[in-house]
Image (cartoon, rainbow, N blue to C red; front, side):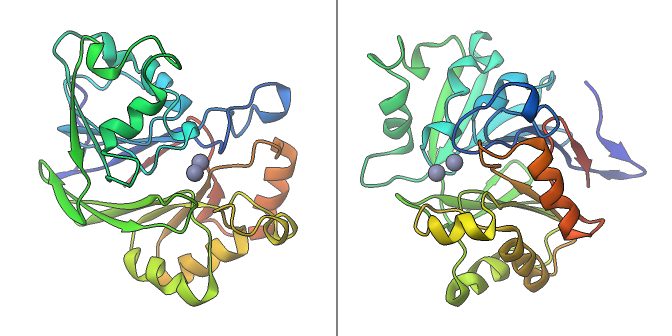
Length: 271
Ligand SMILES: [Zn+2]
Ligand SMILES: [Zn+2]
């Protein structure tokens, strides 16, 4: 198994497996930033934590014998559709821990089974050879020596924001988040001092004005959160399916910052 070690410290290795929002895209115009939907892999020496299970999860690298956990923000299908194709589903007895929040629609297991069960899919997750275990995502819990905190997002039907901390380093995953001036301090306080923020910036200013209440934010709003949180690195995620590479590059160029970029499928960040 590959060790993630630099000097005497274990590090977190983050791989963007999918950064597209709402629905996967394909074709020549979305090759640079990618067309797979929400999935980010965080590897430590012992753990492999997947943030969401969009179509990006299908491209997981070999994670060796690391303990698998999947943290689900919410059950909109762009965040789940990769799960039936997760390569480790077919590994007999391989334990897969899934975390998410119970809502009025049911427990996280029940929410996933709305999509992943007949007639929408031929079987449930429990019928795969892997050993699926479902857990309530409390405000604070741990996965081995990794601390996880959750906060409520601003999104139709609600969604969770995760903060994952290990060895003094923190990553905040805030996809499917709609910015509101009077409530933005909740997120910037939650993300205070994070080494990396992955933040929803699906819309241009014009699109945001036309799609209030859809549950997504803009670049300018994201930059404000980053500044207030005093975070070190930011990657914008949940790219609009209508935004081509050309548009995303233009939006990125307007930011003019070395520490801020639009996430590219396949990008690896090591903390
Ligand atoms: Zn989404
Ligand atoms: Zn959503």
